[in-house]
Image 1 (cartoon, rainbow, N blue to C red):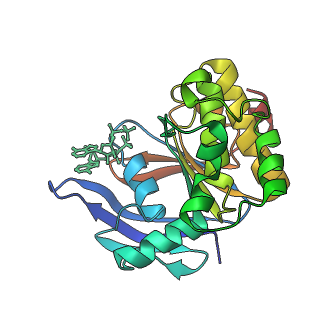
Image 2: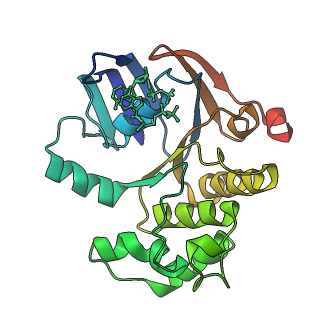
Image 3: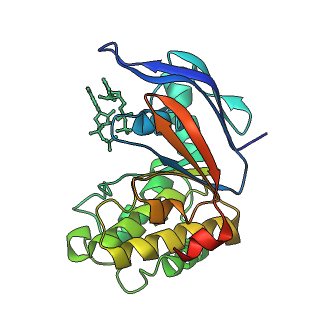
Length: 229
Ligand code: ADP
Ligand code: ADP
C-alpha cells in the first residue's frame, strides 16, 4: 500500500467552505511530495486530513493501507502518535523545555524508552549536537525548525507531514532544512509530504502537485535538473 492515499476526499468546513473537492492522491513509500498552490486552495486542509488532524466530509484517507478518516478521536490520536510526524510552520517548540526535552517529548508522551543512540544520531543529523541544553529562544529560526523536524522524527513515524517548513526561514536556513528532508527520504527511506509556496523548495521533492479551489490541478515529476535550481 502507498504510505498515504486519499480517495475522493471532500472537506466542507463548518462555515460551508468546500476546501477539498474530490481529491484523489497517492504518495508512495519513501517518496517526497510537495503540495503547492495559491493561498486558500486547500493545501493545509489536505495536509490536516491526510495526517488525521481533521476528518474529511467524504472519501477515504489511508495511512499504510489503514483507513483513518473516520476512526474515532481516541484511535486517531493513537495512530497519529505512532505513525505520523508533523512539522508546523511556526515550529511549535515548547519554550520552557530544552532542545533535548523538546525533541524527546513524543517518546515521553507515548511512554516509550528514550533510545539514547537513536536520539543522539538524529540530533547529529539535524546538526544540533552542542545545542541540546539550550532553550528554543536561544536558537536561530533554522535551528528551531531542525529541532522541530527531529521531534517529528524521533518516534520513527511512517510519514512526516510538513506545513511550509521553510516559510519563516532565510534562504540559507531554508536550504539546510530542505537538504535535511531530502536526506531523510534518500537515506532513511522516510516518506515526506510538504506544503510549500516556494518553487525552489518544491524542486527538492520527487513530485509536486498544484492545487486550486480544493482540487489537484497539476502533477509534476520533478526533473533531476530542477534540483540544481
Ligand atoms: P491553503 O492552505 O491553501 O491556504 P486552506 O486549506 O487553509 O488553504 O483553506 C482552504 C479554504 O478553506 C479557504 O477558503 C479557507 O478559508 C477555508 N478554511 C480552512 N480551514 C478552515 C477552517 N478550519 N474553518 C473554516 N474554513 C476553513
Ligand atoms: P495557510 O494559508 O498557511 O494554510 P491559513 O491562514 O489559511 O494558513 O490557515 C491557518 C489556520 O487557520 C489553519 O489551521 C486553518 O485550518 C485555519 N483557517 C483558515 N481559514 C479559516 C477560516 N475561514 N475559519 C477558520 N479557520 C480557518
